[in-house]
Length: 207
Image (cartoon, rainbow, N blue to C red):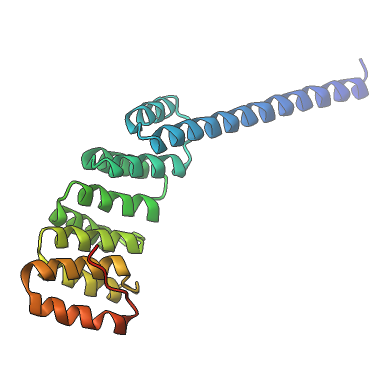
């Protein structure tokens, strides 16, 4: 067999191996996309436990997981007030090397406000801030609302002011939450707050 024939055979074998490797990569990418889609569908339709099971199976198989799968799952647990489960998956997200972005961080805070545990929600938000995590305006609004629901006006107003210090423009939902809390505790202060809202370009509402 000539050298030319040997080289030709080598090239064909290399090409076949490269083709097989590419096919495996495509299959893996397709599997990851399908798993993410299934997890998202289950989570978004109120079935986070089933979504979590699929995610566990993917992790057990050492398959890569899209950060969005964790985001959706944590948000789903948060919506149901399953704060412990949301916290567990938040930590697993980091352990898997996925960045805990705004959606996951804000959902973790929301989980505790849905549980009506304003103090814990505030503690979690503050801890996330201290660790340099990114949060959205809704995380602060949810904490303000949680304190307002407990008629803890002082805490609600403190977080309202803190929201502005963090660079967020307080929204109507946050302002209304403080107003409702004041109505329950201090009518004179509530009237002053109500009068100040238009100056902040906020429309008051007690509905």
